[in-house]
Length: 202
Image (cartoon, rainbow, N blue to C red):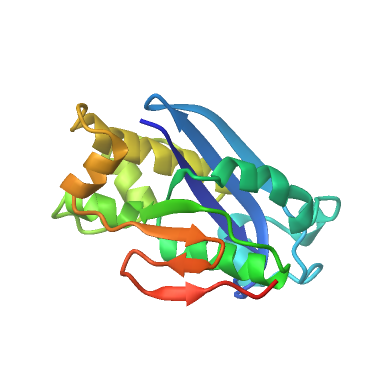
C-alpha cells in the first residue's frame, strides 16, 4: 500500500497562512520517511495567539524559513498523481487550495480522502474521531499539533485500517469502506462530497 499523509499548521485563521507542512511517505504499508517544512507565511510577522497556543510555532521560529514558493516544487513532486490522506481533510485541502491561489500556482494532480471519515467507517461507535483520541485507541504515541508528527500519526491510523483488509489495494479499500474520494487537478478541485471548484486563473 502506497500513499501520503499530509498535515498543515497555520499562522492565522486565514487559510493561506501555512507555517508548517508535514508529509509522511508510506510505501509497502510502512512509513518510510517523514518530511517537515517550516514556512514563512505572507502574514509574517503576525501570528494569531490562538494558533500559537495550539501548535507552539512562533514568528521567530520561521523568520529564516523559506516562503511557500521556496518549497512548492519539492512538495508538488511528492504529491503528483498520489493518493493523499489528511485528518479533517477539508481543512488541509482548503489551506493548500488557498495558498496555491494566493501564489498563482497551478494545482497538482492527486486524489485524496479524509481519515476522519475513514475512521468512522472502519471503527464505528467511538465518542470522538479526533486524531488524538483515535491514536490513543490504537496505541499510537505522538506529539500533537506539529505537522510532521500529525502526518505520521495519520499514516499509522490508515495503516492499521488497511491491516484489517490486507488483500485490498488502496482503491479497493476505499471502495469497500465506502470512503469518498476527492481530487485536485490543474483546472480545480472535486471534494469528496462531489462539489467542484475552479482553480485560480494563471
